Amino acid sequence: GDSVTQMEGPVTLSEEAFLTINCTYTATGYPSLFWYVQYPGEGLQLLLKATKADDKGSNKGFEATYRKETTSFHLEKGSVQVSDSAVYFCALMFSGGYNKLIFGAGTRLAVHP
Amino acid sequence: NAGVMQNPRHLVRRRGQEARLRCSPMKGHSHVYWYRQLPEEGLKFMVYLQKENIIDESGMPKERFSAEFPKEGPSILRIQQVVRGDSAAYFCASSPLGDSGNTIYFGEGSWLTVV
Image (cartoon, rainbow over all chains, first blue to last red; front, side, top):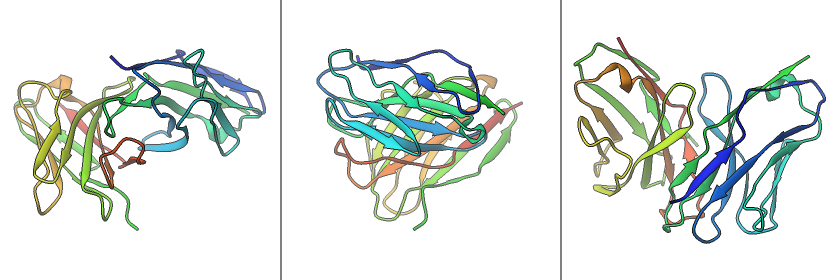
């Protein structure tokens, strides 16, 4: 079945460091891919998405490229801030034809000044 | 526009009691999804409902859990005879249509603690 695998956290970085959070997926066909962010005590917010191969999703300095050949959707940011500290979830849209998201386990990011 | 509204935000129940979690989708949305997030884990799909219909309940535990989305009023996730393992954050999401590709909007979650 469909599944998402993320790199384990926590990821600890200094402010202005480069961020990469790896995400790979297994799915039938070519699902839409998403990154969600969850700040402490809050719900999920959509960070970015890509709907087809080679699409690049971007938002707030974060970006991720849909790589069909490696079935990956790695999240990157060139210079992180303390305010980026949160849990990041990679997800894919279920290939069964309706809006069912399959999430990875999440990666906690801690950014220190 | 109000977003997806969930209540209560925090709920404490003793073992054996019932928990009812409510979700009002965004205006104009007729498709509702429930997810559960256990401590330090990702979100797991539980159930997908349209008005008066359960479309996919493949993620619902076989016993004690039920969900409904009536013609009028919010969607309800009901957990009977709660146990400590039910302690989790329960997130509701909604979309205007059920077709994949529509953006899903999440509520802020209901945190259930079973003592």
